[in-house]
Length: 177
Image (cartoon, rainbow, N blue to C red; front, side):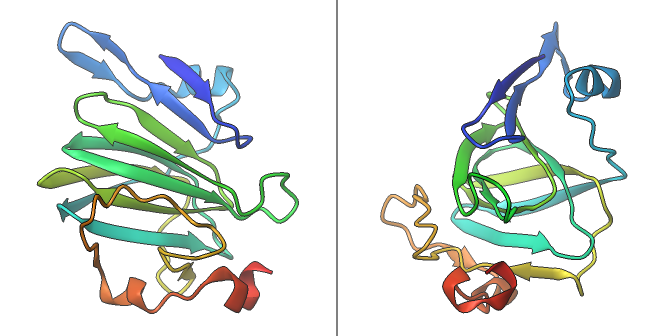
């Protein structure tokens, strides 16, 4: 496996090891040896069609770190640093993850997360460090003017879930100040 640092501390892209037709995506000992030692306790999958934009989600009291990969299709995956003491507070990074490149995004606790489906269909896998708690989940508008995320929409209108349409911008949300 190869680990690549992003400009945001503690946020990494990871290239798995491929041996013949087997893809080794997660090896707890390898991750721990490289100081990527989140304790993943649950695996989730998301199924979405082209132009679906999910997020930006974060759990506040019971935060989730994530290891995101794509089992089928392609997405533009985004992580936003919401750690108030971080030098990169309110900065974001985005990565193309696909079943072709097999890359993963290692997103620690304290980050909001979202993605845009670029292929006709995508099956996204998440290893998470805490259980999903819908009462604890909050979000940020996908088109937040403070973050100014450069979503690769290519002139398309994103498909936004009803709950995500209710999210407001950071500047209007007391949680993130």
